[in-house]
Length: 525
Image (cartoon, rainbow, N blue to C red; front, side, top):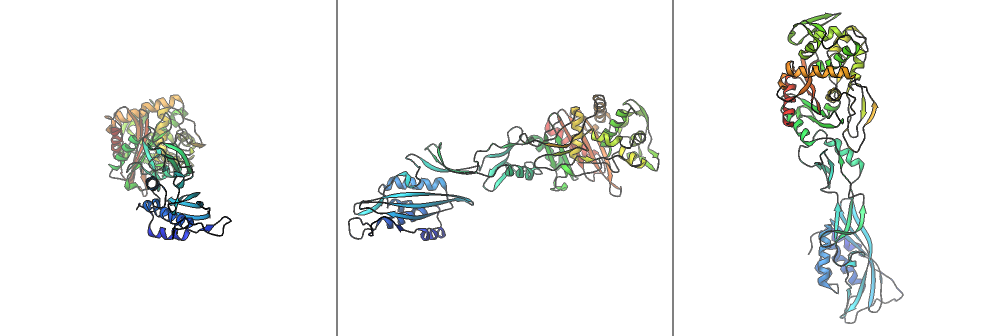
């Protein structure tokens, strides 16, 4: 008795076996011998045993029982059906031979049913009617030496990373992560994209004894579909996830390859939640925005990197008093040093002389006002608009007030500095990003000055915790939120061809963001 064909299924099969006599003779043919069954009854019994998966019982009604038993068992094993039903159609009698038509339906899995019409030859032999055996009894195209098998996408790659490593694989229930914990924030987006691209396919094939496909007998959908290639790097993604998981605060990290715009990693820890805030959550960027403010000053000619400026503990500008963190102060110093030490008072005073649209224009030069449609994900880089008052101007200069950016947006900003040109972010190698609102990067001279200033932040400024992590460029930031009693911590920067931004919510300092950045870079090696 073969596996499969539960009792409930058998009952359905019994009800489905209906004999319809055909031909001109009103009499059912009988094999010689008393009490011999007519061909219709034999065909009915055979189909019932076939549907049940009872190879021995079916073979007993065949003129070559040994060969039949082997192939019937192999067919059942190769298709592994949930159920099988067979319906007897017309029986055409003759004196010593008869034919019977039938339809068989194999339910391979939920929603996967293979049905086809076939026929039986019956012969009178030794005083009884028997089904004449050939592989075509199982399927009209099946030949000697062939076996049936089901081919599906199960186990095949649905999405691979930039290096061809599996990210998602096809399974019976759809796509699943190839390994636990692979890019958890992006898995739903990857699944939606690949599932929408092509539905799961399956086929029934005839193979040789070595499993090589000889012929496809039935097919539904595409079984062989090349996987989509995401721009993610699984080692970089794993490094990013470990880095944010090490944080004591809600943490996010986005990494972009400046030379290509490829998203390399997007990670959040559990405390940051399941919504992809790293890609579209908008927050005040704090002093990381001084990259844009410095660019505005340099582009306008209001200052150079070597311009000497004051850095008092506080500065009263119009109706707004701007303090440095912990009200530190320096004697007059070059702009590049004020940038490295993140002197709020320096940048607020200098920016107060700029036109109302200067900071918004500068921010646009780093993609913070750009808009992209990336298949599968929703991104929001930031929002920086022209200021409407002097108070707004000085607040915007230090990344507070109405200025907003996401970790994705600040990673894009860092990538723009690293590349020295516009960057179009993308998540897929085969699927294009649509640029809804593009941007133009700052001049070569401004980019060169910013790189020098961002390097000084690490070598002798607020991010010296990264000095042991290679040649890193960046900018720290602390941004108040709510009633101003708490602050988020940022770091945005790049090393080699990896630009990234880190945000820690409620850390009240940029130092934890620097620590997470160091953990990330250290894991990259």
